[in-house]
View (cartoon, rainbow, N blue to C red):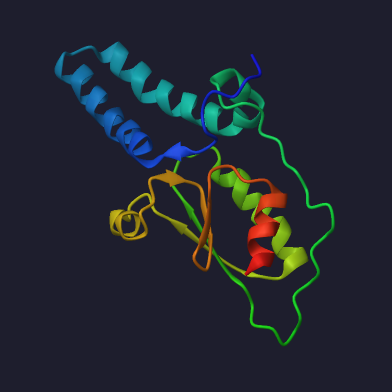
Amino acid sequence: MTAQFKDQQCNVVGLAVGWVAYPAVLAYFAFQREWILAVFWMLGMPAMRWALYHFFPNISRFLGYGRIADAFPAVQPARAQARAPAIEVTFYSFFSCPFCPIVLARLHALQKDIGFHLTAIDVTLKPHTLIAKGIRSVPVVEVGDRRLVGNSTSEQLAGLITMA
């Protein structure tokens, strides 16, 4: 299965519900005195989250997200001039989103070539930022009033940044 059925982005509500459900299910098992299930849940769910997070680029196509591939700019962007003000790039992420570290790594690689200032903001515990910015899915890369939402290739990121 190599088709892409889902957008390559994480819904913030879905991520938050997943983390709220973890202690709720653990409390339910404890209340029911299902200690073996509670231990399996307590150890198994973080292990599964870690495996998903760690191996996501390799298994994403089996989960309906398609392949996690990168496209590089055809022509390397010119370095920013020393006198020109640095371009401000803001990156919004949410804990446990498997796409966020992929896009952040691409931004760090581009930062060496383009020379922009990167601010990374984790919105996991900042609902006011989510509401104020209207962020419903992550990762989000923002340059001025322009945004890219979801898994963006290096080519798309370079295009967004150099347009500023």
